[in-house]
Amino acid sequence: MDHTRPITLLVCALGGEGGGVLTEWLVDTARHAGYAAQSTSIPGVAQRTGATTYYIEVFPVPLAQLGGRRPVFSLSPVPGALDAIVSSELLETARQIGNGMSAPQRTMVISSSARIFTTAERMQLGDGRADAQQLLDVVKAFSREHHVFDMNAIARESGTVVSAVMLGAIAGSGLFPFPREAYEHVVRGGDSAPEKLNRMAAASLRGFASAFEAVDAPRTQAAFVSSVMAGEGNDAPPPVAALPADLARRFPPAVHDMLALGHARVLDYQDAAYASLYAERLGRVLDAERAADPAGARGFAVTREAARWLALWMAFDDIVRVAALKGRASRAQRVRREVRAGEEDIVKVYDHFKPGAAEFAALLPASLASRVTAWDRRRQSRGLAPWALPLKVGSHSVFGMASLRLLASLRWLRRRGSRFAQEQALIERWLAAVETGTRQAWALGHELALCGRLIKGYGSTNERGKHNLLHVIDELAGRSTLAASERATAIAAAREAALADEGGKALDAALAAHGAAPRPVQAQPIRWMKRPPPAKA
Image 1 (cartoon, rainbow, N blue to C red):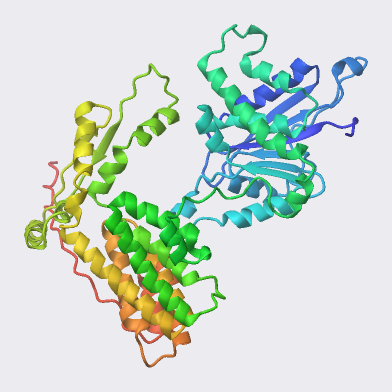
Image 2 (tube, rainbow, N blue to C red):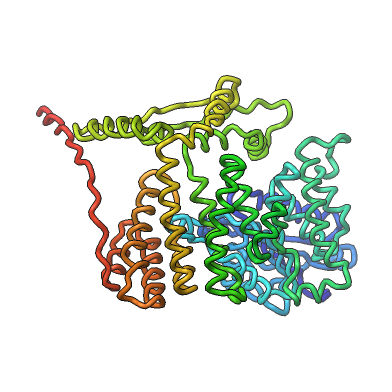
């Protein structure tokens, strides 16, 4: 350690995560341990707004050994001259590295693997998320040592905020010459701390201890350097859910992780028979892929993509699904953790619903459903707004929770509803196209499987995605005038255009560029509004 210059640390936190408290803890710990320290906050706006960085310098020699001299500190960080960066969000970490703050030969990077998606990511019709693996690669390439783990998960499990977890990670890294007891002394409340810890301090110490071990343990292992060089580190993915033995035998290992997630989702959504239907459908895709690629040289990518998007489509959102999610005990526990409620605290949760005619018709037989939707269309033709029933349900109350559980118990009605039959018919059309395309050419089947991404959201967004998917299948997948490779290219272009433009102009342009017919114009009701009377002079 260079005893002639301060140790420098940049703390990156989002709004409400306690970055200021963390900075105070670090300065107080330094002073309690007998070291000189200084901190400055640098308010700024990041992708999610409200991001603030805190810059801390600590002189590595105790004040008692300086003979009355005082170190001179800087007020702002210098790019490339930081000893460490600690961040509560992975993209924010990469952003600071992109600003030149981290030096590969000098800077240690401690980051949470958790993501808080930016506005730009959420606005995309497709998967607009930044690639987490690419962000991790940036962290690894521009740090002399890195520790990446899910700080938010530790905070939730400990019942504390992420600032306490970040403090534990800093302590476990050995960045500053303070003993662990000095950090814990400050978290307890310092010299004025009561004999019995309060609930918040106890939770902070739990989060501190968990993060300390997460960073300290790999540092003390002899194989740490080789594991980092091999790319293992602390960012390994969590284990996947257990897969039933019969499915594990039926499907190749390359598909197991995605299949396990999809099978569990469909089983939770409906019942065992529905989960068996999911596996049977996926088995047909696997058979087609094995016919096109017997050696599995492409990692069964068609089956993997089909497993992903088929599960999401089969578990489509409806009022029964929403009620089931709202009424789960795990949801109530999560809400209490998020508001940091104690055992004796009363938490009231109100859920607002506004189901319309389409949502109610979805659970009715086709004959009754058509009457309900026709009635609502007649209302709209008279200039009225679509019918909807605003509801406010207090899920904290016995009556509110009983209402949610009652509605969730109607999943048996879903199979008899008009929407269930419609969704299954559309799913079969998509899967048939995937099977046929895969047998013709593997690339064609793969592009058609990826078209499952078009089915997302609910309401008009969901309907628009299904219309786009069916049009792509009808106009491009079965065009005998084009070679299979040309159809694959056209389908890929059409899919990306559909995901890039909600209005559909990009999709129409992509269809026209490949000689396909444009999408038919969808009828839209015209609402007539009364002109307000002129104001009196």
